[in-house]
Length: 255
Length: 325
Ligand SMILES: Cc1cc2nc3c(=O)[nH]c(=O)nc-3n(C[C@H](O)[C@H](O)[C@H](O)COP(=O)(O)OP(=O)(O)OC[C@H]3O[C@@H](n4cnc5c(N)ncnc54)[C@H](O)[C@@H]3O)c2cc1C
Image (tube, rainbow over all chains, first blue to last red; front, side):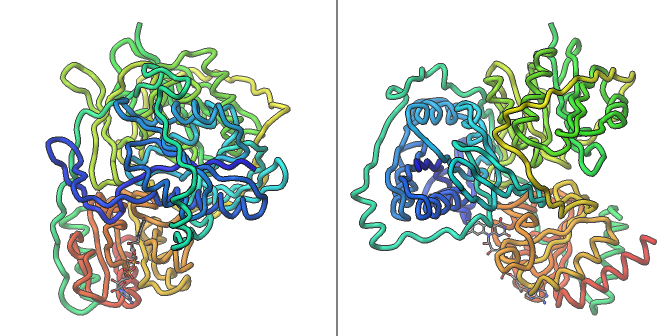
């Protein structure tokens, strides 16, 4: 089975966001593999254990994305592809076009991605890719069972669980609960260094810069207003409860 | 010629979702004189809802009613949208940023070759009448303002952030479209387990009561649920509570869970980690109940109660019951 995993590198979720000269500062920022993509990588490994095959992890982004791809190799993926978006006005449209141009030249049975990226959180790329490749998709899955050319998945639809039968090849995006991602082992990290790592750019794909150019642009950035610590209510718990209800009525006027 | 806006309506538990009316309001902020609006209602037994929707849309309401469409399936729903687009060429398609809209939106965008701005929380017009969309980054640790650079556009609207539209001046026209089931579907929904039926939707709730590791067990969520019942609110959770198996991941609030913006957020036994704050710090009023006075959650809470949640929460339920009944 040919498995592809879509990977993005994001800020560590611990990071605070600082805006400098109208840009989000990446000064001293720690990067990680997008947390949802970890579930996708883990699922690829579990499926390969069962059905055999190879796992290729594919990332679009700047050079530093290589780190996240290497992490996936250290977890056990077989090959990595980094598609550079250097000099390209990039949005989700762009990324999906680059991925589709690359994957259009590959033979694939299963494409896995994260449910969304925790930085820009658009949740578009994987679904767009499925359409561009003209294959079915199910997003936000919490279970995947493959039998021949047929997959049965559980999809989390805001708390409801849908069981969907999908014919392969297909795209699935991973939701929390799908599995428990492993940590890269030390031997895994050593082995990862020798695994095939391909770099490409738009010129290597059958796609022109204007065809991939972003359809949206950012015009400004802002931070949320700072929240001040409020008031700790005094008295015993019964008094505190009564005061809180009273404050919500008279001060906040919400009840 | 004016632009054509198409709103994809959404049905939940047999009613129109509030976010559909919010998307219609988004359209009325974005559109100009000469633009037109259409709505699309896909489902099973949609007749009544279509005429209800007609009260809000001064334009066509395409109603596609078929048993096979009762449950969302990206393939069947996209097929329906393609048939609608044979009749109206959309300039802008708006959907709710919901399980359905998050999935259908990008599929429509790819089909139209359109740009998409997801998870929009505010819309305004700039100096040159251009439409500016505001959306969160890093689950609300920052915000960006975005514009389209050209071509067709898809927008998904986060529930609970834009005021719902009022009834339209004149009623829209319901157009029933036939649905031809496809013989060769590549994905089929076999079964749906509804855990949320009858419950207040977490992302749309005006009041959210969340439990963290301090709740200690699945059983420990009971007092929170009782409080939620009294307040017609929804129950959420921290990741630690989900990881510990006290509750379902669908309840998780935070950077890797849902982002909620209710009027009142009550955090019970939650420490206030940065990843949790990302998902709830835009709530209007935050209340924290925690037995540790040093817990970081108190730094963002408007009102704090230091104490054992198992003592405090039932007392709160009692007090609210007194004033609400
Ligand atoms: C990649 C990544 C993504 C993450 N995403 C999220 C996310 O989306 N959402 C999220 O919530 N977290 C997320 N986290 C986890 C986050 O860092 C915290 O670990 C988590 O939020 C802690 O949950 P908690 O506050 O319930 O538990 P704890 O931090 O253990 O806090 C429990 C609190 O309960 C209090 N308490 C205990 N007993 C009682 C009692 N009887 N009465 C009152 N108070 C009591 C304690 O004083 C303590 O403050 C993420 C972490 C990572 C690494």
